[in-house]
Length: 229
Image (cartoon, rainbow, N blue to C red; front, side, top):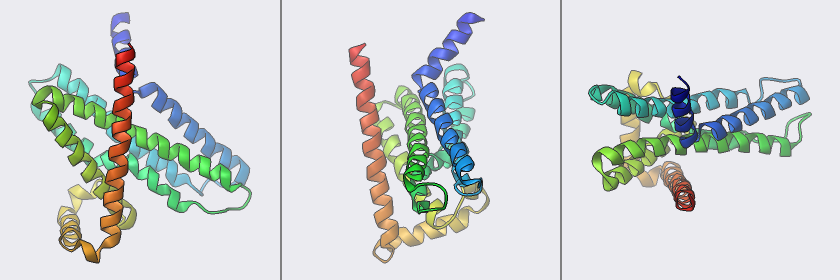
């Protein structure tokens, strides 16, 4: 029993669970402080919901990792939950776009709201990076390093596209299951005529660049830590 608990602890530690959980608690704590200061729980309450959604791809990636290790014969479960992960993956970096809501509001200094938004954005970014690293590790062990990096770029590209659709077109992750034709038609229309959709082109490319550099920085720090050990 103790050995099993220790194994779970090592797995969560290796997958950044504890610092991400601490960062999430800090974000929610700062939000609660804002509620106390302003006597208003409505402003920025969307951050808490978005943080909840950002945890979904991370938790699904942990489940996929468990199935990959323990239930390899049920490969269809790995594929199924891997697809669910990809659908919800944009919810993690989506928190970065909540800075659009920043403005001066009564009773709360703007620096407090900057810190609030930054903490939620930071947490969402690392939830996405950690879950992507978990998924890449499984793809690499099964298909090799080159394919795993192609998978990373595909996931980052799809995520950036999903963030755009969520922020500007107000689509949700589950809409890909309920309204796939409408979403596909919008994406095809924008991709086929990018120069008449410059906001789409600029946002998507910049977000891809930002997520790619963020992920490479994380991987580099991870390798440095491994070499030190």
